[in-house]
Structure formats: structure tokens, C-alpha cells
Length: 93
Image (cartoon, rainbow, N blue to C red):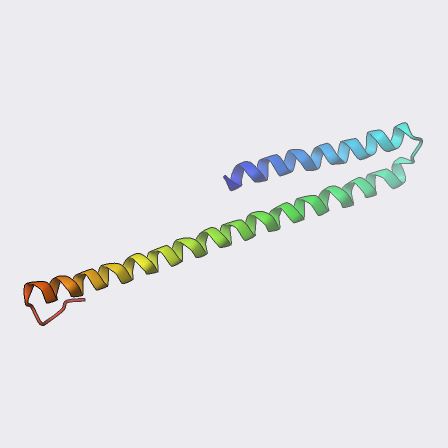
């Protein structure tokens, strides 16, 4: 999912770069000003998208970590209950 998002963000940044230069030139803008403007805006979008992807991966990892802890706790409790039910006083967990 994130690789696709990064790929699409790259295409968007290229499109923004070209659109600013073409539209600006159509309205009589100078390439001396349009190229830096386009570069700044497209790099800002690129950096923003990288941050969105980083945050998404971090949230995904956090939720997986929480899920793993929950499963581990439930298995531990199930093991304790099984030992109580079978009459074994020692638990191996």
C-alpha cells in the first residue's frame, strides 16, 4: 500500500512541476522564477507525502505490536486456566 502511495506521489510531484512551468510560461512568466517556484512546491509535496507514509508505517507497526502483546497475554492466561482446570499447580509460562 505504501509503495503505491509513494509511486503516485512521485507522479504527482512531476505533474505539479510541469504544470507550474507550462502554465506560468503561458501567462508570460520567466523561467528564472518559474523553475525554482515549481521545484519548491513539488519538493514540499514530496516531503509531506514521505511524512504521511512514515507516519502510516509507524501507526501500522504500533498496532501490530499492540496486537502481539494482546495475543501473548491471552495465551498466557489461557495456559494458566488450563493448568488450573487440569489440576496442575505449576505453570510453565
